[in-house]
Length: 115
Length: 115
Image (cartoon, rainbow over the protein chains, first blue to last red):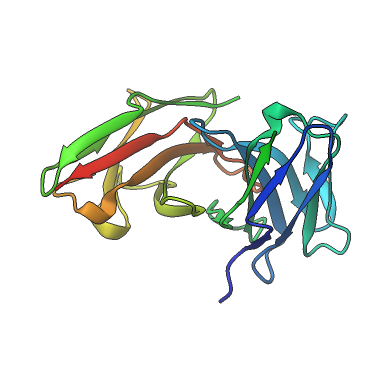
């Protein structure tokens, strides 16, 4: 079974530029999450999708971050314009959705450096 | 809302010695508890989880954890560590029975196994 795929693995940009990250969850997983992991901290939830609908985006900085999951499968997270404090690893995770036991399956992450 | 405190940011231990990584949580509702491991430049991998039943939970790679409701703790233990256990360990919590899981993570504990 293929795992959660993310790309790119690494990205370096200058502040005020834009960047997009892509995630393809495990096949059949209805729920998809984007987490932000700043160096020295634990992952923090940015947004949660159930199929192609947003369940929770309360911690997403909507003035600069956006995310979509148009067909209920893969997802894109965009940052525009980037700030220095956006330097972090962006982790995508998925699980089966309702009726599951709570385990999230994580991708390897996309590391963003903002100069 | 839930919160997780991992009391030690770094834990050095000699190879074949026992180790305990401490985790305390705060929640006004019943919770599910998880330990994840993150190897360098990789995503998070589930070590073990507590959903209900026996308070002693066994996971992969010889790790186990004990849920203590009165002390709101979920400490991770291994009787004899190996070099390959060097990684960062994250404790996480989510409200139980919610049907749609959002994990809240601690800041992590870096385990360094010394040969």
